Image (cartoon, rainbow, N blue to C red):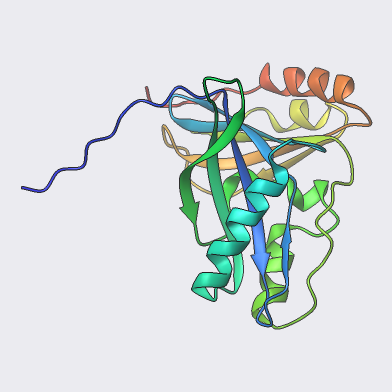
Length: 202
């Protein structure tokens, strides 16, 4: 019986880049997001205004999309690992040929969301800008919805309810948090996290 052997990877953190390619080969990418997981489920994705490996991630994504002649949005997850000399590099973890959970922050946090640019690409329309509008983050709602009004009372929040039945380990919505600076963003993320009643099923 064929087997696949997987080893543990010592990595600094995980990042993902969401990229889009049009029918005529135009490509765009959103800023790398730093991803935090809890019990194997994405908890928070925070796009970074700057990351030293942004260009490397973009180049890898664009190369794959060009080779596949892919049209639309595609997501690439990477582990950021360090070598013996302390240099960082990317190790591919996952590729998803679709809009991706780690890019949901783009609905409010980017000039053009991943959803709009996916439609633009498929419809052969010019792609929209992918730059950040403000410091932001996306937090998943897992298993159980938090109190709506309490979440919306936190400044800069947007709550997305997917209309799915509550179930342990199931993503049933997400919350986008925006702020004027990273310090304010961190405080607002902490306030939202205190309201989450996530049921991870673990």
